[in-house]
Image 1 (cartoon, rainbow, N blue to C red):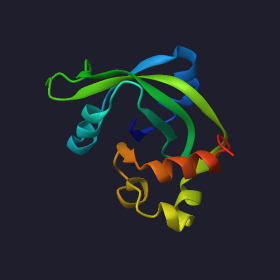
Image 2 (tube, helix red, strand yellow):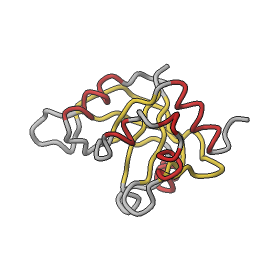
Image 3 (cartoon, one colour):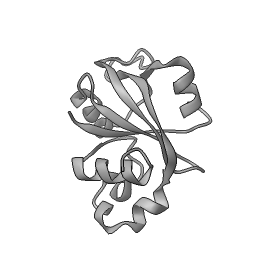
Image 4 (cartoon, rainbow, N blue to C red):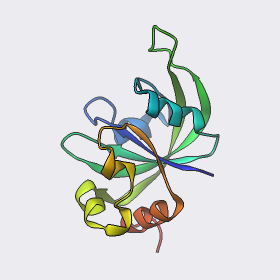
Length: 137
């Protein structure tokens, strides 16, 4: 199982919205690199749910409920989306500042490519961030 991070502006789509509807298409990705990551996602993969803009923090975990298919919000038909399901809320959100302060997380795309909206997370970083957020001992 692969791990990912999905960014969203909480004013447009928040963790509360995701939990309310449960499964929702992750639409609107128009960056080719991010779109490639969506295409690489497999059923059951997990992703951190990241509130961008003013909050800049990981607040939950979603699970891929449907693999990549044409994004219905893309009139060109070139981009894809995946469906995600709310899985777990982080007991304690993990901020971007905390991630940047941890040398073990310095190579994450979240740190190096701050504008990328969909990115992979390696297994060690996944486990470390889950612990930081209070999900695992």
